Image 1 (cartoon, rainbow, N blue to C red):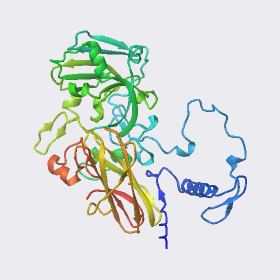
Image 2: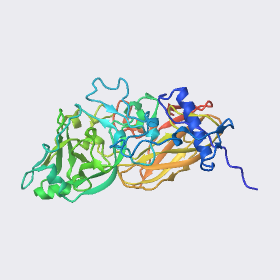
Image 3: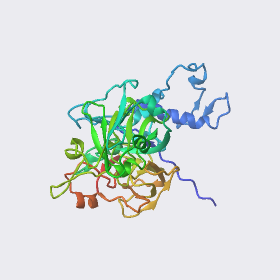
Length: 435
């Protein structure tokens, strides 16, 4: 005798309470309508809503829709208007030096749409005329050069999928639980297909000094002229001067018309609105690598140049702010990533780390890119503590919060890659907790 299929549970996936009860009711009715339509005969009335009543032909099937080309640049459905980047209230004193977070809880796969890629600015977003923009390479080079955008577009291009994560992602959780949802705990994280020219190609074109060169300095064209030091080994490996993002030119908030992309390294190193690269023999110790983006250790010392974003993961559904409506079957899903390479394994626990099961990794599994994982779960209505623990190809295991604090203390801001815990109450409400 075959086992009965577990009853699928229902989840309210929108955290932030941006849907009113009326909106939620309409969404449930639409889901029921779509479920019934799968079994319907074309042109006939169909049934399948939760009340068992019959549904007629929906209004959008009774008349012509919008003409082709009604929106010359495609836009999301109006029913997805709640899927937006959001700024955390009170996080910064100035909107010109702030961040908006990617809604990780609403996304599928590993690619972040350009309009939802998180944005971190240090002095506002410049609007740059690409015909006037220039990239200068100077310093320890045989021939300093100035490139126009047309010059750069003539070089052989490459396209690669990589994540960008701000070094301050999950910063608000160092000392205690501070924010309710995954958009705010982990939303300074996005992943895209980037297109551009390898930095090594441009350095070769300028004839950089291979014996003396140890670092490069990247400088942006924004108001604070944000600058970052990058080791020459990284610069010659996979660093890219990017102008394309997911098949189109960069968006202004992501560096249009040109940005540096330093895969696997904290996002501030991927300097936006790139205008200059200087080759040197020592780090520059600029403001954004001395005063900021350094790690305050328990002994009061500050650790500089923590470039790599270590192995990390987070469950995006079920996650904080969401609600499970029924006992039954759910699919736990989330994202894992590592600045050192590919994700090798993700383990999931539903009891706060006492027991672990290995999740399934969804292709593609790429180096220094987001990896989607999933695992089946049957919720019996009892309290649960959901966690994910990632392991990368170097063998590095994502630490518990307690383990990270033993080394780093609680006064830090940057590079928090601890295991995230979501608590499911018997009511089905999901909360951010630390265990």
